[in-house]
Length: 217
Image 1 (cartoon, one colour):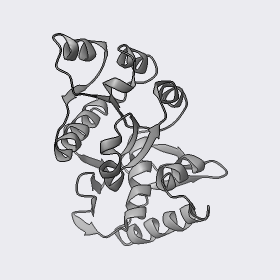
Image 2 (image 1 turned 90 degrees about the vertical axis):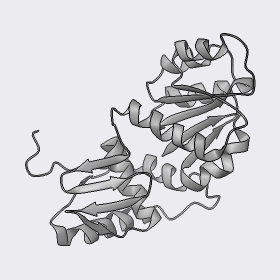
Image 3 (image 1 turned 90 degrees about the horizontal axis):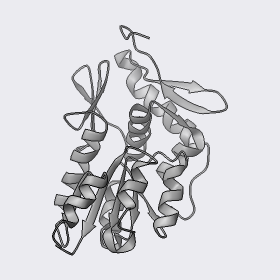
Image 4 (image 1 turned 180 degrees about the vertical axis):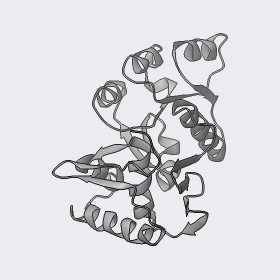
């Protein structure tokens, strides 16, 4: 998943091992990023790092998942955050696996899905296990290949610079820009024996989900 965090430093490292994470400097930085066309699927914020009306401000910008973390337990605090638009308000400290499970659930709901599966025709991705099946057969993808495929299927269309940021946001030296073309080529080659090609190139822009046979326009 592609996450924005504000003040949740204790979870940054474990989240980064499983997701692409951008850590905002403060509330203003987070709201600025959310106002732009960044493809975050969820925001995780510590209450001490943002104002009380942060959930309402977020909701005026997008409808993606929002999880608030608090070490306090004042009367009415959780209810107030949820009523403003937070999808969950969790008491810290808490186990990372619990946070991750809440994260998956909130993102599922925000995307209108009942489970962690993403399906396009005969192609199925399990976002929890990072496994891919095509016509019921498991297809092996490297982590980078999987992230490229997942990103395009989730967002339907993604610009080249957006996809590059999602994959290499945390790498200081980045990667050669042509790596994306290489990864797309590998994905197509692995799915070609199944007669499936889910990715369409938009020349000079990026990629989008290709309409499959039997789909209605």
